[in-house]
Image (tube, rainbow, N blue to C red; front, top):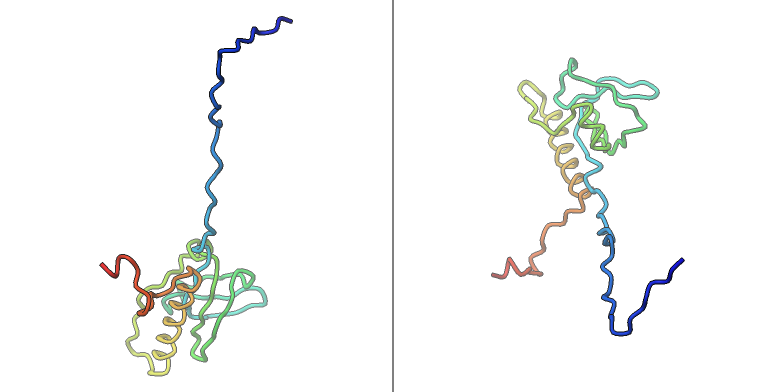
Length: 140
């Protein structure tokens, strides 16, 4: 083996790294969602729910995937679940036709929708701006 010649007047430049370290990824805050749902049936391991109070559009969701936050006597529940499960079951927050409903059921649905919206904001780590602390954009 032959040794490479060394020269004293050659200055080695610092090597650029082949790869840069990855930026830290923020946790996925949108992984969970909370929805106001109508309960149509229940078994030991699953709930039959719909997002529009239509029995024909109701789907079975495993209880292992749901966290039932609150339940009204009118059959309205607020359930937290992974967003991928909600997309797979096609459950979304949508407009519900309230025509012909009793006042108690309408009030229960309104409270459940408001609670679900607050829960979604908490899961997304959303905080409304406070009046006492102005940011740079608000000041301008």
